[in-house]
Every structure is written in C-alpha cells, then in structure tokens.
Length: 242
Ligand SMILES: [Zn+2]
Ligand SMILES: [Zn+2]
Image (cartoon, rainbow, N blue to C red; front, side):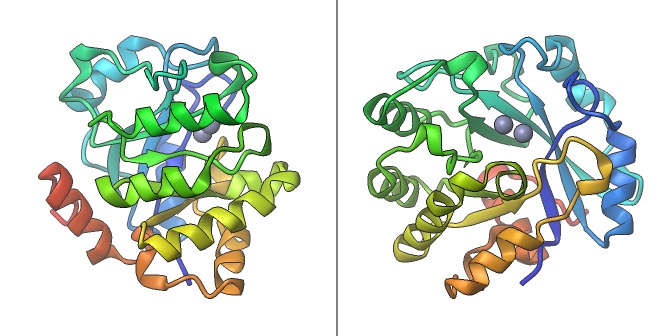
C-alpha cells in the first residue's frame, strides 16, 4: 500500500509547527507525492491560524506549489457536543477540504456519550469531509454508530500517522476503527498530520497496520490519484488533475 497525497499537514501559521507551506510542498514532491492539503488549525485554539490566513487561502495561494497540487484545507476544532466547529460563515467558498478534530484545548475533557454526540453532529456539517485522529484513546466514542453515519453521508475517517508516533495507547482504537470502516465500506484517508516538512507523506506505520488487518486497498481514498480526483470532482466540483 502507498499514498499519493497527504491531506493533513501543518505550517508555521499554526505556531507550534515548524515548516512553511512551500517547505511542506517541496518535501512532498521529493517524496513522490502528487498533492498535499494544507490544513492548519482553526482559530479557536490559542496556537491556531489567524482568521486572515484562512480568508486569503482562496485568492493568494496558487494551485501548484513546489511541484505538487495544493488543496486548501483546515483542521477545524470541534467545540462542543453539538458538533460546532470554528469555520466562520464568511469562509464558505474558501476551503476545498475540511477536517474536524477534537483537541483538548477547545473541547475540554469528555466522556463516551459527549464525544459520540459531537462526532455524530459534526458529520452533518457540509464543510466537514473527514474526522481527524479519532482514535485518540481519551476521546473514545461509539465507533459503530459514527462509522455507520459516515457510510450514510459519504464522510471519511482518518488513520493518522502522528497517533502511531506519539500516542501508542491509541493504536488499539485505530485498528478497531479501520476494521469497522472496512465492514461498512467507509473510505479512510491515511495522513501524516505533519508539523515539520521531514514527516510530510511519512505514513509507513499506519499502512503497515492496514496491511496486517487486510484492509481493502480500494477504500484508501488517497491511495490512488484517480480515486482521490473522483472524490474532489464529485463532492467539490474541483479538478485536481488540472
Ligand atoms: Zn489535530
Ligand atoms: Zn493536525
């Protein structure tokens, strides 16, 4: 298994990351990737990107940077049990792609029911395509219910390489989530969640896990250029092959 694009990367505008968008793109190009999404943190956490950054995404960033196609994204913060996120209404035409993630800084501590409801509710948001690093053990949820809803709405689940690197206690959850995605025919997206260019596109460990559980390759949405292009064409009217 392999990936052709990394759709979860952070740049220095999230102030706890260390590389520029250009450096991330060059690193992706050198690793043989076709595209990346730049997905800095929403503004409701202290070290998230400034709102001006997002407002400018669609008219300042070119489509090709450093040899790769650049998808305009955000890692939005899930703020509460109702599934609200920090994507402002005036950004409705800015993003190609939205990740929704739970971070303690904006969501606080939680329990099984609150986390489950937050994920179920955020899936109804048309700006959200992917649940980010949902394997995190502290935010365990009703996998079956949420993944079934992803199947109904055509939403996706991330298998996040940073979790494998930094949150070993969450790996059991990641494996269980992947198995349920296979069962319900839900696309997974295997991303680095890179905070420095050296790790853009580095997803060996999650791919190894997917191989171990015989995960169907055709359900890795970013495993194939045509498959990924079809998602953006069908869902977003965006031709990433241009
Ligand atoms: Zn995150
Ligand atoms: Zn992230």
